[in-house]
Length: 225
Image 1 (cartoon, rainbow, N blue to C red):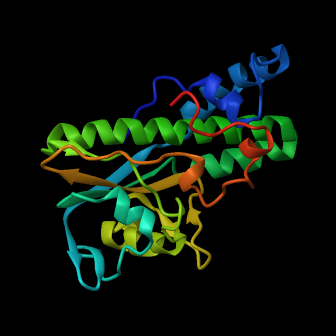
Image 2: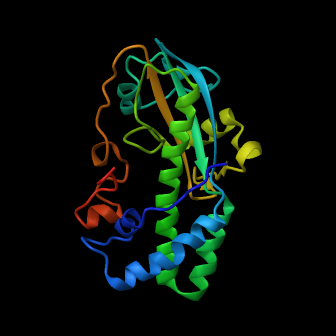
């Protein structure tokens, strides 16, 4: 299990759509609920390293009987011979806390939701650091998740099955490829013996380009990362 020493209130405010310095009201709400979120959530992760195969039929990870379809994931893993598949979740406590605060005040619920979004990204960073402290990876790509670019979201089911994520960390997926608990992330990180191109990141490879809350504000979710 991952322990979060703190949750970035700057990132959380950004997820709330705040431009520039947060108002005193926003700061007070985030200060109030940041320790609550840290106390309630139970961050955990699972991962597996597997070989990567490029055949005439497409790109495959050993143990996943489905092509990694889409040009973006192929570009992302170009030159890699293996990969780590990982899944991170804050547990069902995050969803429960968001629902509970929504009953009292929607502004509180928004703050908790955004604190949880920051928390799961921080948990991913910690998990990746821990994973590659025990796995030899001369060079590696950044995390690439289902739904980025043309990498289909419905591969979530295959990734979670491959990781046995339901039994190990209680992470499942709906028929619409939405994960439960909702504050969860799956990702693939390519491993190579040679330097790899990290490629495009952010809006240019995101299936939500032009339609997310950050786009409406003229910003991106990767600012400051």
